[in-house]
Length: 188
Image 1: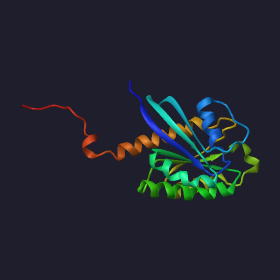
Image 2: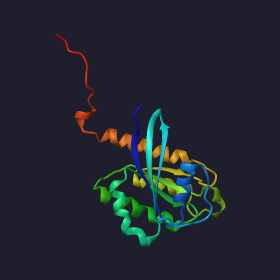
Image 3: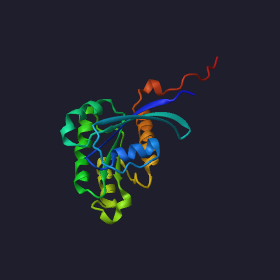
Image 4: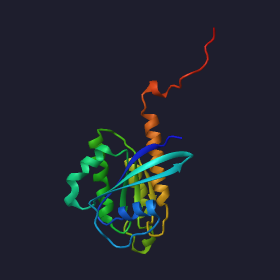
């Protein structure tokens, strides 16, 4: 059975846990130390809703000094995880900028994205409520999920859900002709 490849991009501010989420998803372990990423690429094959998917995941730099690289990966990405930290209000406030930039680069009104509130295990230090996350996701027209890379909560779900969003988007934006099934009956 042939597998479809999906280019997923993990974006967000510095220190929100993009690498920790990605490595937890790919390798099933939590990276504790903070080592700012410039750009890392990972591949994983998995089955999502009984369909094989080959995920090509780009873990991006959150640091502002690498912002020039953003447009390049935004051009090639097929779906984006917009990650903020629930213990960092500034990272939450940066999300709208990432969202707008992706839509501008893609020249689209909508595009497959998921809003991810990471570090849900640090609830006592929370600066962004779940309600605020849901409100922003409604405003942006995208789904929202809270994750904990440390405790592996909703990590697989976030990546799998993004693939589902991409599949739905692709089906809805396929040219009419391609959607029609070939074959059928001919009455003589």
